[in-house]
Length: 159
Image (cartoon, rainbow, N blue to C red; front, side):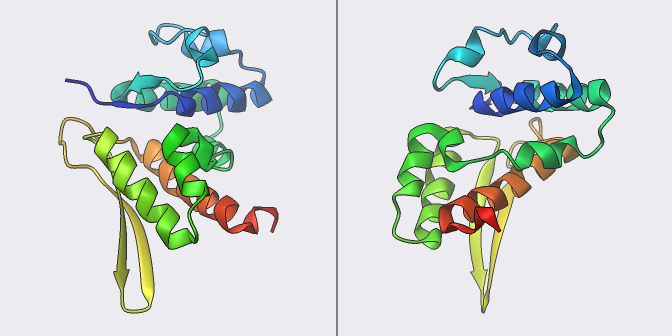
């Protein structure tokens, strides 16, 4: 069993590497992902494919901070109907709880968690399956990506 993640992560990655004159064909070569898949509104990719393609993109671009650039492109809509549900929530806490609940229910290997301790709120990614771990770059991408989503949801993205 190989858990799946939103294919929009790969769509973002293909768009980002174009800044370094790397084509989608170059990035996806040998991955099993096709350019045709990128045209689907909501699709899924096998868990390990994200790790492999992100590392491959870093090699092709020679840009060690690529995960950060990728995170800057994240929006709640990357999560399809779950993201849209988060966008219509009354406040950021409700939006993050919506993302936590529904993203966590769709993927066994990647569980976002919202925790509050006294005056501090923490957003983390729990990875309960030992055989399926995000690479360090994928972890950076997703954690910073959620920060970017929070900025968009609160209207702070233009700051």
